[in-house]
Length: 279
Image (tube, rainbow, N blue to C red; front, side, top):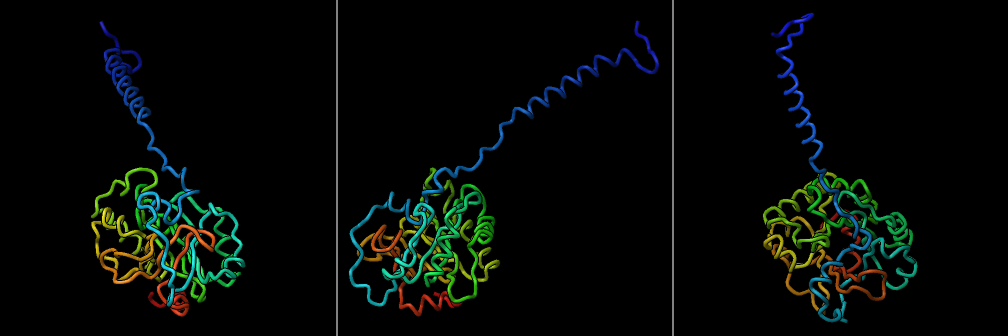
């Protein structure tokens, strides 16, 4: 025989106890859900423009000796450490690009010294971003890049920022994305960069990667200057959409610190790009 005492009905206790058990089980299940793994930036210190292109595509000989009409430059990143910029200028460097960021979780610890040092030595300089389409969206990474040194200044000495999009150093070459999804990711980055920095970003890539991972889209040829990586005596085939490269990264090393580059034109064209004109 059940009884009710001070408003409490003994017959409800089993149901209440059962309900409490269900809640406890649900709480345990929620706690047991594993947290999402943090993005891997373990290689960020050694990732730089072309590091994965050289690994996947190799080197096809030396660059052409005849550089008439070209302007010599180079690019560097944190793994170079402090750069002797006056020596680079004396060796013929006219412009440089410096790695600023990777994904949305890495800033080059050498960036300020490298970027400002190049400017102090009289070089026209710009910043580049190592893309990580596997960790966050294109728009988010463009904003991160601009916030951490990748913007543009109307001072005649700053080149527009560049998007370094190449083989994934952490896994699948195309970051697990279909050509359509990769093209959309690059579109989000470049549109955001243009809206925020008021300049079109350069796109750094190789023709082979572009074909494999974007399906050789021609979407960017009329909007974003091409910085092409190919380590050989000639520029070779260009990705779809571009009828010329603005910059050719032609060698992994040489007389200048880091990678060796030619701007496709005389120094006046480099100055024009820094001043706000198209490449």
